[in-house]
Picture 1 (cartoon, rainbow, N blue to C red):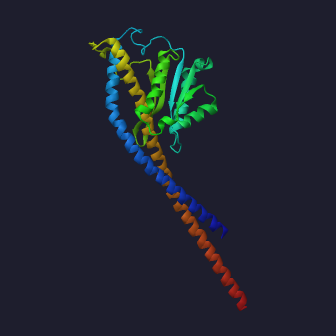
Picture 2 (picture 1 turned 180 degrees about the vertical axis):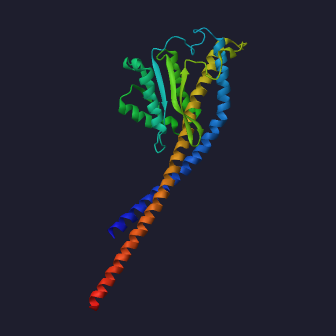
Length: 292
């Protein structure tokens, strides 16, 4: 009977776990719908603005005119890692931290040894990983992901852009998961600063712009605005991807719990049947002994 008690305890535990994972799946699905709508509406605007930004950058050739398109070899590099504050989302966070580590080891190991590579972490899970592994962590901002908005993200974005303008860094890269659908997240490594030619745009596609009111105004207003939108879009993409990854992970966990419950119930029924059979045999054996 002790065995039956253990099985009943495990069944109750799995049922409780299934309730939790099912509830988390529904919560993530609701959050995903809201974030996904925001991402889908932002993408066309951000994409067109970035396309215009590239063409303006092609028209402004002098480095002193466009401080966001320096062409000298980068000496100091900042890697901005975007993860999540919470776990239970599969390999979502591990993919980003592993990619950051691989990026340093494969492309910037010499600069890292010279302390010319630093990481800025957005997301508690990434921050914990980089601290535990001893990476050069410039700083972190985990609160930005709670109730994310452009206004809330703006101070951080402006600070990183200001550090680049002041030449504290010569290159800024973004490593994050881009949202594709609820089940698929695409790991992305984007060169944020300086402005570089996107792979889907050919160099000869630049246009001869007429700058109004002035070229200086465009450099000071339009280019920074586009860069801010680009950075915010990356955070928003990561947030949508996080909800999708967690919803998928919790869906699989719920299915696994259901499958395990069926196995445990079958095991319990067999054990209970065996126990009842043993009791009957004992009663029959006792009755036969008394009859003799």
